[in-house]
Image 1 (cartoon, rainbow, N blue to C red):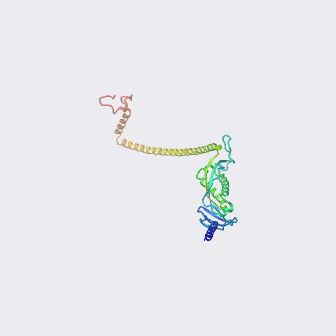
Image 2 (cartoon, rainbow, N blue to C red):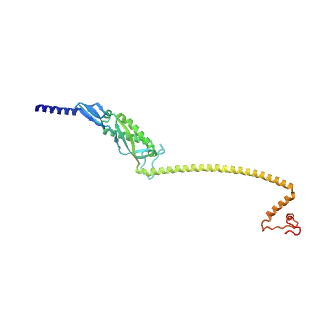
Image 3 (cartoon, helix red, strand yellow):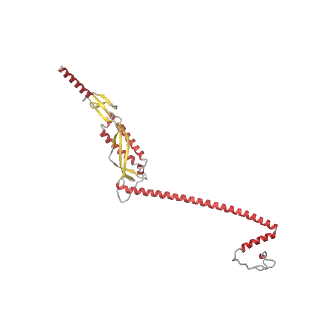
Length: 312
C-alpha cells in the first residue's frame, strides 16, 4: 500500500515538474517568443496558458506589450537663424558664437514613447529593450538635429512646433519600423537658449521687432498722408464747385433784383425816389456820431424840409 502511495506521489510530482517545464503563462502586459536551442519557433502576442518543450530544449523570452518611454539627455541643437540661410555670428561682448554661421544654439530636451509591435523582428534586430532604447536615442538625436537645424527659434516656440515633432516622429518611425518598433509619440519637452546667447538673441529679436514697427509706422504715415492729400483735393474741388454755384445763384438773384427794382421804378418814379432816400437816411443818420455838412438846398434833405421851417 505504501509503495503504491509512493509511486502515486512520485508520478504526481513528475507530472507537476513536467507540466511546469512544458507550460508557461503570457500576461496581458507581455508578449512571448519560444526559443528552441536559441532559435525562435513560436510567437505569442495574446495572453493565456501556452505550451512548449521542456528546458533546455525550448525556452521562453518575454517582451513588454505596453507603451515604453525613452528619455535621452538634453542635447545642444543649432537652429536656423530668422533670415534662413544668411550667415550671421552672434554679437555682443565677444561671447560664445553659434555652432555654424547664422545658427542659434539651444538645449533641446526630447522624449519618445514606443511599442514593440513585432517581437520576432525586435528580437532579431535589437535583442532587448536596452539596445532598443539606445538605438532610438541615437536616431532621435540625429533626426532632431537635422529637422531643427532647418527651423527657426520662432517656429520652435510657435504652433509650428507640433509640425516639427511630427516630422521627427515620422523619420524615427521609418528607421525603427524595420526593427519591430513603432514610435507612438515624440515630444520636445523643453528648449532653452544657452546662457551665453540668451541675452544677445533676445536683444537681436527686440531690434528686429523695432525695425518692423518702424517700417510699419512709416507705411502708415505714408498712407495717412495719401489719404489727407486726397481729402484736401476733394475739399478744394467741393469748395470751388460750391463757390461757383453760389456765384451763379447770386448772379441770378442780382439779375432778378435789378429787374424787380427797374419794374418798380418804372411804375412810380417819385415813390421809388422817396423809398431809396429813406433807406439812405436810415443808413447814414442811424449813428449819432455821424456829421453831415450839406447846403440847405441839398436834394438829399428835401424830404426832411417842412413848409414853415428850415431843415436842421
